[in-house]
Length: 126
Length: 487
Image (cartoon, rainbow over all chains, first blue to last red; front, top):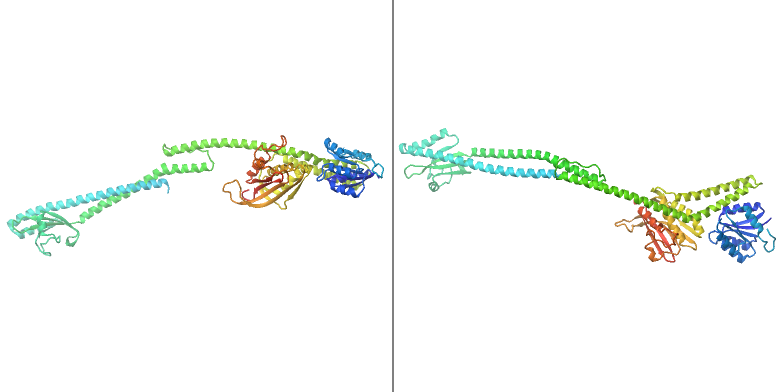
């Protein structure tokens, strides 16, 4: 068991793919379709990392990162940005993201990024 | 009534009047001449008899003179001679046949002729010639001749005049009917037929009339006019074709500009299924999957591929230059397709759609053009809400009257409204937004043709576009499309 990951993306197929892939790599995965639902879940459940898309209806991924930075500064976030949109990646990092991966997602690189996140309070690195 | 018949009728009437007048005058003249001849003959004969009777009276006495007068009647059948006395009482054998003629009247005139129409002398002309008896007695030879011959003669004259009139009228009628048919009715029928063909748009096939008169001049003038009209129509047609081609090119360019605006959203929309497909493919490539897991991953890859194909098809459908083709179209389907096409860019701008359409909406329209109309309006609405928001698309059937067509009758229209809560349109811009190349966007952000083309397309569908907006409170564009026969 490598740790609990919350995947946030407005596309269910993307969430399910990431869930299947990461589960096969030993992660425990939960997913939500909006940033608001994710914030709600984070307030009641404990996660080791949050993997979020940037463009979502309602609260965007950047806003989710900012909120988590305020509410859960110990919870590392990784944002998924479009290929070539370096500005978005920089904005996410400035907002407090720990790392970013570019689309199309290479799940091997994503797994490495997740494994690299620092340990949260009370547990070791995933 | 045909013109030729009117002309013929008038000419025949004139001939009839002339012949009738001539016949009447001729009849009157001949009757007078005949009557005068009758009286003259009676007087001449009367004088001869009176002269002889006067001589016999001197040599043989009154009775022999009277017998002489009576003997004249043996050889003269028509004219009757009598010995009359001016002072004889009425009913006496010697009294005048003309009742009431006085001795003083007979004395005053030497000889006279009286035409009688009443009494015993009715139907006779009576001539009185005095007989010289050489005494105080006044005797006369009364020459009476029946009017039968005169009447027979006058009737014959009248009959000849009437026969001549009828013959002349019939001959005139026949000749003028032929002449009128050949020189008037036939050319005018051809001219009318030519005019009808011109009104139906047939400007070819020149009209050639025989002869050299005003009608042939008119035919030549009409042929010249048709040639000039055909040349002008050809010029207009070529100009219209060029204008339509230019307009179509402009619309297609604007369509491509619209595609440019939505392409970034499309790229993002394609990115997600590509990610899913790549991820699923990588999962499949790993070992240790159960058969069910393999099938499930293949199913997801298939559905995501379909999703990409659908997005690309929508994009290409919109980009393709369509042949304008109006047919019974379901506006609900058009709205759904347009919303689906614009969903990526809307999502990127944090804009959501609220589509309040719950039934099939049939109008006669070109689906592709209607999609362009809605896409232009919705894209403007998305751009009007930089902070995101909601666009409400609603439809409603309304009884309305076309606002810019004079004399337009109220009819049933489908009103498709697109409302946003964006920055709105200032009043001074509101009157100009449909002008070509008018834009409030930064250079390169818009062509300024979007709403102009929207208005053109809707106008071609016999509809109109209404807009309501307050600066800072959003805008609502409503497209009215006729439902039914006007569509």
